[in-house]
Length: 403
Image (cartoon, rainbow, N blue to C red):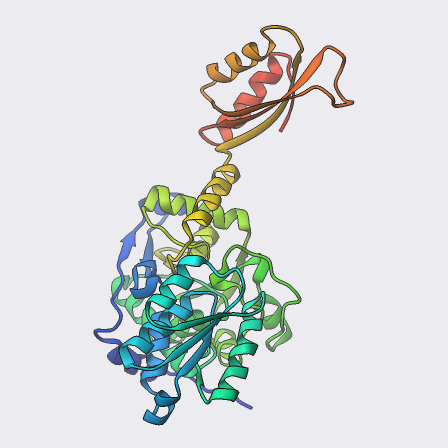
């Protein structure tokens, strides 16, 4: 069966429907990214959208077009959090009962926000696909309308309104990078942009631990992943939908992947340099620019697709990003087991300008000589060059150092 097509006219109509419901999110110039890539880069701050992500666009368009009979039966959705909040907000505005199935371990703030909008939340399964099976079963048993997170023409049209905003806010853009899971946002943005500016390059960005599109595009049809592992729950989708796959295949120029380390570095950089709090999925486009600064023609726009992150996860990701950037350094150093041995080591570390976070001793390792002790030391540095210089200094002073 041929997948329904979404047109520019559909996206324009969706934008009219969203007037007064969603906001036109800011487009912020990024001087630090521009300096890195050698040309203008802007951030499309969809993390500042209502409900904290782009999902409210598509969810409202889909639900506003339900018949009175469908509305009376309520809606059901499956989501790790962002789509859940979009559905819950739309349901509250339209007076529709809503039930949302979430995978186990969905971020607590997303769960709380979804309940706060009035939706019922049910946890089921480990992955989004598991929750989607339960949502479909619920729809069959109760008559509720399933609001798919990405694979519906109205959802794609709603998400595509972001593409119209990008062209209006950055009329000279040459490349648009879009975080990608199931592909609803990427499909909608690509359809809108290619209809108006076919010369603009549209790039999807997936977490490499949950990258369903590269294999599916190579196979010519949606192919499920055997497993997924990524902190970017907002784009952890195991298989493209029929509608989104066809649109991505026909309108998107390239899909690239980024590592967990790159996502961490990007998230940290956005907090430090752009003062933008995003979730890991929302940092994917920036991660692609950090990975390949000369790979994308400028002016470029990186979409920050969402900002709903658990504060505990934010702390972990920031620490991971600091470690990935060389700002945290963990060393094992052998020193003489003599009075003053540790003080001498710490003196060298201090002289180099590193900050000691933690120190531990190991005396029982078979690799140690009788008169040696291994010191495990965690340090805070100014980055990779500083860390490398510190290690070199210690070795020049005769210490055996493993990092």
